[in-house]
Image (cartoon, rainbow, N blue to C red; front, side, top):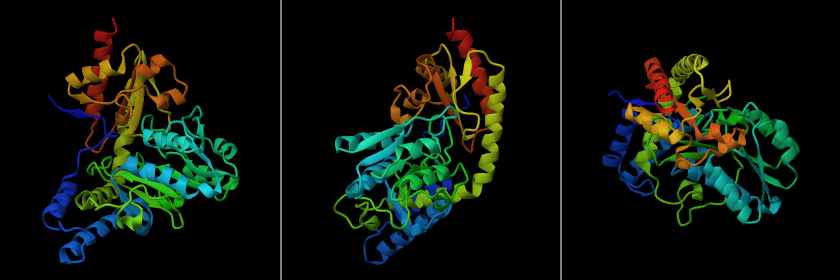
Length: 377
C-alpha cells in the first residue's frame, strides 16, 4: 500500500541533507559550543552558521535569533518573557482567540499572575482585523500576539497592518507573531513585518523536532525562562542542541531556495482539491478562500473526525483533525470562527508538503467519497 502523508502541518519528513548535518555535528563537530578549546570552537562555528542560515531565511539579523527547543518554548518565552519584562509599564496583553495552544496557555498563565488578557475573535474571513487590535490596545498594553498563519485553517493575517494598528494605539506595545506555519511556506521578511518578536521552528520545514527559534528585534527585552546558563545571550540557558541546530540551518536554507517551487506546488494541489470539493455533497470548506495553499480544512458532515482519520489511515492516507498538540480535543479555532458543533466534530485538516502530488489528492477524495458511502448509512 502506498503511503500518502498529508499532515505536513503537524510535522515533515526530515531532509536527508539536514539529517546528514545533524549526524556530522554528533560525530565530527561534537564539542560543546561553549568550550574554549578547538572542538568547542568547531561546534560553535557550525551553530553560528546555522544561526545565519535561519536568520537569512527569516529575512532578519542573525544577532537577534535565539535558539529554543521548539515553537512552544519560543512562544512561551515571547509571551510570558515579554509581559514580565514590561510589567512596570502595564498589565494588559492582547492575543487572538485562535492562537496555538502554546500562546493561549501562556496567556492563561499571565492571567494567574494578575495580567488582564483580551482575546480577539477572527472575522468572517478568518483574520484578525486591525480595527479589533486598535480597540483592544491602550496605554497599559504591554504585548500583542497574533499568529501569521493559523495552523488549523491556514488563514493569513496581515501582520504589518496589525503592527501599525497596535503601535498607533500605543507605540510602546511589543508585538509578537507566531510564524511557525508561515516560515518556509509563505514569502515574508521578519524585518518588514514590523513585529518585535517572531517564532519559527524546524520540523515544519524538513528539519528535526526539538529545535526552534525566537527572533527578537534590537531593543526587545524578555525575562529568561531558563536559569543557570550563559548560552543564547543569557536568554535561554543550557547547552545548545548543536546537532539539531545544524540540521535546522540546512533545512532553512533548503526551504528558502525551494519556496517558489513549494508555493506553485501547493497552489496546484489546493486548487485540485477545491475542484473535487465543488462536486461533493456533505463536505464543506472551513478554510477561507485566501488561506495558505498548504493548508485545507474541511468537514465531512455526519462522520466524526476520529472515525474518518482511522478510515483513511487504513488506506494509507494520513491527515489530522487539527493541531497535533490538541490530541484530538475539540478545535478552539473552529469554535472561534463560530462554526457549529457538527462541523467541528467532523473537521479534517489536510496539509500539503514538498513530496505530495496531484495523485495524492485524487486518492484522498476517492477515499472520502467511499467513506461517505460506507459510514453514512
